[in-house]
Length: 390
Ligand SMILES: Cc1cc2nc3c(=O)[nH]c(=O)nc-3n(C[C@H](O)[C@H](O)[C@H](O)COP(=O)(O)OP(=O)(O)OC[C@H]3O[C@@H](n4cnc5c(N)ncnc54)[C@H](O)[C@@H]3O)c2cc1C
Image (tube, rainbow, N blue to C red; front, side, top):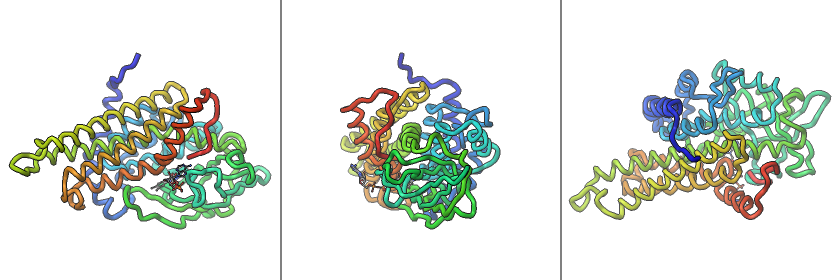
């Protein structure tokens, strides 16, 4: 049976997240976008009201919410500001490898630390020479007794400057391509340096940094899963988290659509509100359809995860469609505003800049198409591992 009705608990979560977006995020979003300031005051409040680490299991003090619950929350928060939501949600991305492959001891230590007080974690996969092609990474982890020594640089790391913990992918066999990658949990210490903070086009309230590990020593228990099996952990992580990006894209698209609708009813040209012109109505109609379809695809990808099923295909469908749709909707919203849409005083130009990153991080739209084509042309059995692209 297919039923898209939200439960009362889910409606309450949606309302909580929406109220937070209205009262705490939107009033500051454009200011933080302008200055590129990290929104620590908003993050502190989100932690207090339980809108951070919603994925953390109940046994470690978390809310243990489902993937669908998470997607519902992420759409609302991103409707407020996707840059702030990226800062809020990065712990979820960093935690997924631990939930997937961490030992019981590591899960307890890590999740408890996240739920006890406000802490940040980052997911470190990308390198200057290894973006979509994860297998070409050069960061290295060498086993020394019951420790690993990590050396290498990761770029574009969300919350990198502020993280207390990092989940890091490194080569344990330099010659084995994606079969030589392992995943690690790395607590921050003085050997971890932040080399660069990026000045970005959009999502300027999120922190994006280059993080370097300089002879960073970690106990061997922080190996996540088995040696040389980290690539599978990374791909499973992205299956887990791409519905969240799709939800964020849905939130951006919805915000742009709502601004465009309101403006079209107020702006008068040729003696009538521009909403009376069919060309505008058709743009708004297409925006509404794209928001609706993005949400349904997102829910579908999230529910499969909640049912314990592999969602690689559906996750890529949702991420690809919702991201491209957010970009199209935000661009059309600027069109509905005419010249005013291009001016920073009006809200939609920020949404157009923010939407762009949706098509880039956690696998570009081209990479999603590669995954979709592969899964469609060569369908795999549920237990087969993911293929080598991020
Ligand atoms: C703001 C921001 C935040 C980020 N946060 C994180 C983070 O927290 N952690 C992290 O690890 N990474 C993060 N990233 C990195 C992000 O995931 C990568 O930028 C992304 O995967 C693309 O890699 P790349 O930039 O090296 O592009 P490239 O891989 O160099 O791609 C360049 C272009 O070529 C295309 N392309 C590449 N290969 C193929 C192919 N086989 N077929 C067709 N087209 C192809 C791509 O689609 C793209 O259009 C972040 C990036 C940004 C900008």
